[in-house]
Image 1 (tube, one colour):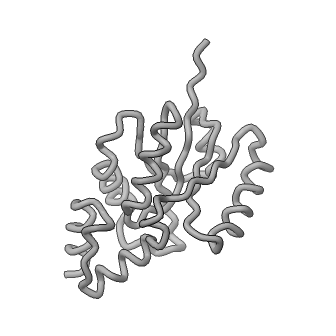
Image 2 (tube, helix red, strand yellow):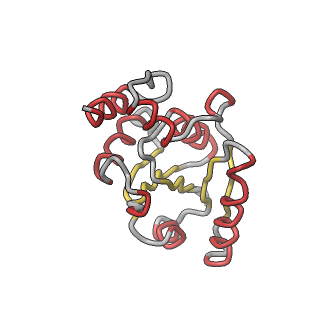
Length: 161
C-alpha cells in the first residue's frame, strides 16, 4: 500500500510573495500533495479579497503539479482532517516568528494529535520578506518585482491607483 502524504500550508497570503512560493516549491518536493489554504482572516483587514488572494496564489503556483490552492473558512485542523492531511506546514523567517508559531503548533497538536506541524525556513534572501512589507513598499511606489509574481505586482499597482 502506497501512503500519500498531504501537507497544508495555511496563511492569509495578502499577497502571496516569493518567500511563500519558495516554501511551497520546496514542500512540493517533500510531500505528495501540498494544499495552500488561504484564510479569510477579516481581523487582519486584508487588502485583497479572499477570491483575489486565491486567484493570485493559483497564478503564482501554477508550475507545481502537486499543489492545490483553496480558501479555508473553518478551523485549520478540521480543514486538514477533511483533506486527510498529516502535516501543517509553517514558515519561520526569524526568531521573532517562533513564539507565535510554537503556540499555534501546540494548540493544533492538542486539537488534532495525529497532525504534525513542520517548520521550514525560506531561502536566505527571503527571510526579511513579508506580505505587509510588500504592501507598504508598493503603496509608497517602491519596486516589488523581485519579491512577487508579475501578476501580484500588477494587482498591487492596481490597488495603489
